[in-house]
Image: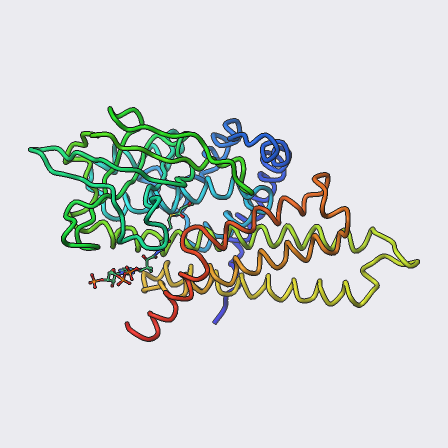
Length: 380
Ligand code: CAA
């Protein structure tokens, strides 16, 4: 069993790293400080194929496998985690369900521009009363003739605002609980579809997260994604892949934290030596490196399973759980190694620590990942 990337995958890593160092890293500090969506760099990412990576070229995608996508996500997130989440929301959460459950017309109309990056997509699942508990969704979809009328609210929808296309979920048969949820594709600008103000967040400040409001939004039946009542399973399967995107983002953040800590350990002198000569710092760096490498093994194994079209629900949850907690641990240790300097905004590590936290929360909290892992072992 070999979890090492191939020569081709390493070449793509190098290309994406050089691109990210040139086009993304120089923006990261200012867009975080100003909470500004990086409109200037997203078309450049699209030009490199980063917004539709693991999809067929005939549909406008870059035609890579999932492992390559995870590697590219790592490199983008290593430079800036906000760019990382923009990339994964479009690739994994918006494009994938349309690619997998959409019909030919929906793929042509909505998916192709998303993969080419001329339009962006996002994913509207969470609601004020339905976070971890997706079944409690209160948004409703009522069928009237050839249309659906949507009412309700979504919360924390990452990339809402800049996105043009919204994959959203609503309860179309309240008596049927999770089997009564249906997915729809909404266009920005539909009458009654309101996009709220971005939240003021701790991290990933350049990737807006907004509430969405549906006031009698009339959605043609041709915008229904998949069958009526299939929405919950579409959401769950989408999140299996999405969790690999977030695990990759976490690995990228953790790698950046390690890079910063290592450089600082070599350059900062205390007690007559670079601090990397002191065992306390050496032990911390060793633990960081082990956690980083273990995260990659779990991530690439799960991505290979997705490429082989095997069920990878548990492996995705394990990769996301471990990598996100590792990103939090590594970034916290990186701040500690920097001492007082780590606590001020002139140094990158404080941003890494703020950005790492969300990876333990979105696309299923660490607690939900543990629940998924246990259920896959105990029940399925
Ligand atoms: N693949 C296929 N089917 C699945 C599945 C999966 N991964 N997970 C569950 N199902 C199926 C089950 O087999 C079951 O099928 P039947 O109807 O045939 O029985 C059905 O779905 C119901 O499953 P559960 O009984 O497990 O459902 P549950 O209510 O107990 O919930 C849960 C399960 C794992 C807790 C789920 O609700 C969950 O994942 N919650 C977390 C939500 C989440 O991750 N939200 C993220 C929002 S998006 C986001 O964060 C994006 C961003 O900002 C960037």
